[in-house]
Length: 172
Length: 291
Image (cartoon, rainbow over all chains, first blue to last red; front, side):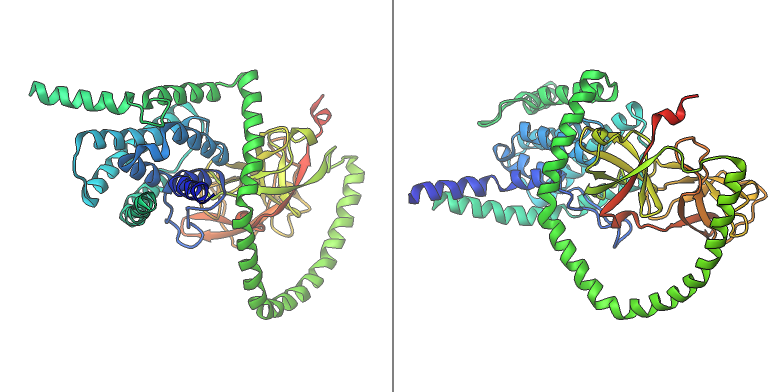
């Protein structure tokens, strides 16, 4: 009984980032504080994807990233497939960085995350502007990306603590 | 040099094609799949529209359920704030009530006059539309789209373009219908364009003298008025109504009040787009458009 409970707890803790990713995609929790601060909005999903693909790709899995993107498109009212493409570009960058580096620090992660967000947004805009009639404000996307990059170290720290907790639970 | 290029290629190929212990699909496969889904969705056919409609209905319901704890806390915090500010609000409301009582008499007079004029003209300004109430399922403040999801769909006769009201005030129009739900594009969204009439109190009964414009969403709280006549002199606190020029909305649905802000005229909406719980939907009778 104790082993079953321990296994369940381990699975639950390991699934934490994935559950958070799905929850943020499906719920109407606002990651935008436009009502309080006009320009403050950021994309936690991109941070989750990048961090966990970089540190432990099996925690999320690219199939789940794809599904979370599709759900996000439905909830946001965007054409299906735009968010998965954007998320998968970030996942690709993380996977590439993981392949070519041995030791990473916060600053190397932060810099490569900047590139990942930059290319992810370019791909997102190319698809949205050229193939749909949806109008977007570039300045809003810029602010969104800026704050996503700015808040990365904060979430990096939280996820690092969580990752340490995961390892301790696994050892225990 | 050649070895460096090889390493780069290998790293990219590995990132695109590798599968982890628990991953069944490679990134390349999923990227291709996403692109195929995107083009199927942007070039809709009978199958993809039906499929998307089913997905939408399912996801909206689950999303509404998943958001309920968050919405509950939001509701509680709003209630507490409301209780704290009730005293001051009551004072303001009392003085406004007095003003409104005096205005009500003028409105009664104008209503009677309007009815008489319509009878003389033998027209029915309301048309063949009926109203139903919709509950807001989702209100995600996206940086890209200002829209809400409501729990009424094509089952109840909602069609694309149907006007959506909060009480008597226009808040947006339906842009996507599923069987059990619909998406409403709010007036402040960047993609929203509504033909409107700027009516001064003495011009309401004489629409020929009123100014026509397009109410354009800017992605912020307040939409702006565009395509105004060159000779138009902006004034503050003029009421804005739908003009009905698009042939979809009835004319005379109140929207908000003008406010001159620098070089543009913004419209303070009567109904706040981010404070909606229930909305009224005008169901357009298709028979009306047959000639």
